[in-house]
View (cartoon, one colour):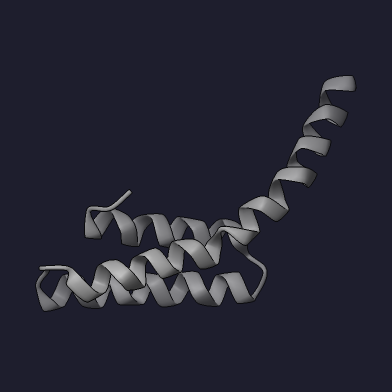
Amino acid sequence: MKRILIAAVAVAFASPAFANNCPNEIKAIDAALQTASIDAAKKAQVTKLRNDADTAHKAGNHAASMKASGDAKALLGIK
């Protein structure tokens, strides 16, 4: 029972920090897109993932936002 309580507290404190990183991830994608040497199809895919991340963030779904951001960054080859 104690472990469950500790896990719940950890998630409660981690969620706001996780949520506040979404805009930074989206900004990193925007910056990388400016100089990326990728074909139009891949650029369209990255742009869609970036927009999905922004939409999810604004809707409060930060896990989905971070997932979409991570996928976009992977396609761009950035960490």
